[in-house]
Image 1 (cartoon, one colour):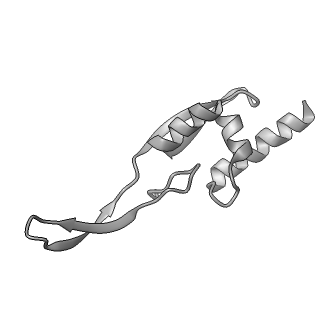
Image 2: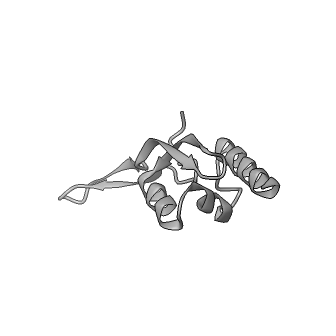
Length: 95
């Protein structure tokens, strides 16, 4: 399982540990990923995703999963999230 947010594409970054003596060693900064079930109002079911904590706050701020995916860029989304986005668009078009 990759350490990448399924909604924002946020992944590991690299940097340095810097000691008091200014010795530098390489390290990784990992994203704060959580397994969550988000409710889709249009589909009427929950969707399990592995997203970062900041993405979860953004989903709440935009008014839910449907609104977030409507504004999200396709190249940032994972395959699973892109599939859900297309299902939501299809359901909204038929309704």
